[in-house]
Structure formats: structure tokens, C-alpha cells
Length: 119
Image 1: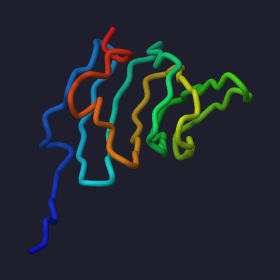
Image 2: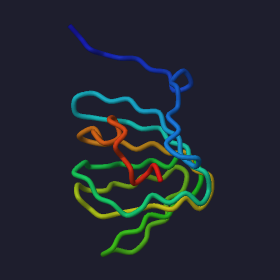
Image 3: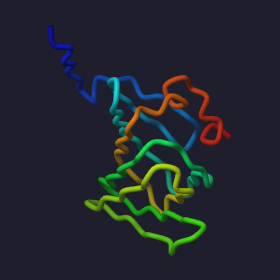
Image 4: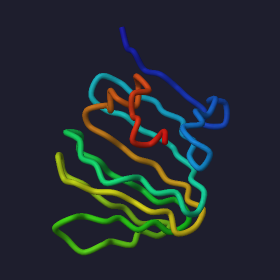
């Protein structure tokens, strides 16, 4: 029997992670999508994770920073692929709407133990 699940973003209750970040998430066994809204000035501190990540910036402007590479500016309509275990962080230069896709799902986000975002 199929375990297909249908979701409406508008109907999903947002999780307020901190005053400048909210998200809605859906995940399966091997994949996670997180729709997020950020206020300008929010900073995701430098971190790394085993999960491969694709960030799709829907609107706004984000600056990603990496210790060993040049910063990357991501604008609405652009994508960024971050390989597994690459140290990175991000600053929201404007209000931002974006979607992150992870493989495998971020267990720290599911469990609410992602303290680096909750400060």
C-alpha cells in the first residue's frame, strides 16, 4: 500500500523557531523539505551536518558564508547545493522566503534540538 501524503503549505501550522524564523516541514524516510520565512538580519550561525542540502531562494536575498570558500549571494529564483559536512552559515540581507531540501531528513529539526537556530 502506498504511503503517499498530500500537504497544503497554507494549512500547515508554522513552527516559530525564533522571532526572526518560522518554518513548515514535511519529511519521509530519506528526504525532507522545509519551507521557511526569515526576517532581515537573521543569521544562521556557521554549522555543518551530514545531510546534503539544496536551498531554493523564493524571494529576498541571502548571503552564505563558508570558511574555505568565497561568500555566495543567493537571490529569488536561485538555488544552492551544499554537500554533506561542508561548514556554512547564512545571513538574511532582506526578508527571505526559501525552501531547503535535505537528504537524509534533519533529525535535529524534527526533534527540536536544533539549538543553534533557537537562540
